[in-house]
Length: 452
Ligand code: HEM
Image (cartoon, rainbow, N blue to C red):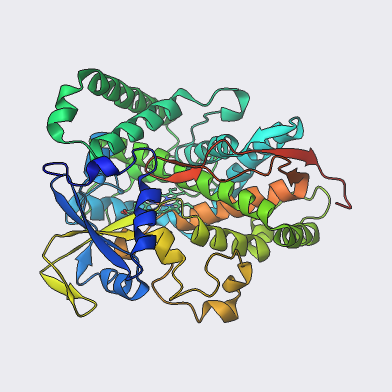
């Protein structure tokens, strides 16, 4: 249609599923769609994606919807423009907080939060998996990253920060499919959006204020390793010698609060869903946990790193249900992909992860949940660019190890302590904001007896 293009055809609450349905009708591996004033090329053929992943030819563009998310995440790592000096500066300052040594140092705090989840589940019969995984991941990033306690498991309601964040992300998605004139006319929605952003910023200011008042530089509970906020407040960029401006520290704290929990809670929820649908894998996981964590053995970082089945469950979950359903790319110059599809410089390209991760060109029995794909001998044969749950190149996820350490621990602890079942045989319903996760997913949990 004139002006709006295909925008009205895209359902607001499930755009990703819509783009996948279109992909299923176009097995060639790419299609182009006009959305508002943009011409967007969707790509999911593994070989074409390989070209898009070439950093010398393509980059991550910060256009809609990320340019809208900038309203609240500003120049945080996720939404900063790659050619902007502040991105490189923050990336170099923060990188040390994501190394192996830091993961080990964060472990006691990750365990403290995972224990809070287990304590809640020990007294429950039915649990809302995504809601509790959200509590877990939000509390973990805020405690390990900023020394701040949300204490989410103490309240029946999710923290108000999450409501504001959910509202703001939803509004950002609405704006993504709306012409700017309509956005400007919707005064009420705009006021609510501004109020949600202000509430999130108040929380961020409180987090920073608490740290400054404590004056410990952020090495407190994290085993002598400076945490994210400590680095941002104290460290200088090794290249320029400059520190991060206060305004940018706020953007980064908010970015980490969002990026550091939304996705990992989705991963854990999808993982439990997959285990319930695949009882033979669940049995394998129980056997591994019983071997490495018998009885009520307290998990250590070293034991968690010895797990083999649990991390393969996570890898396969990220293939079948990627919490971030797409990543954006754009050509640096006019170019041609696949030898015949011309792309003008700056064309918005979207790599659709679900059809890429299930492409028959790259995966045998793509719809099957098979954790043996991730055995080292099978991994070596994978297509090099058919699996991108953490993005690509220099803008790939900085929190990958953090997420996988946290998720290994949480899943292992759940399996050590609980028999999980879903008598209602839950059918997957996807809830989408910037990420996707299961909606209305409740399961039954019972404390395990040693023989179960
Ligand atoms: C970037 C996925 C967990 C922080 C990304 C990107 C993806 C991703 C796909 C690239 C986005 C793009 O190209 O636009 C995931 C998944 C996670 C996860 C699937 C969990 C299973 C985390 C955690 C943190 C984090 C735990 C923080 C502790 C970030 C940040 C960026 C990012 C800051 C932006 C990096 C940059 O551009 O410099 N993530 N993420 N993520 N992620 Fe994650």
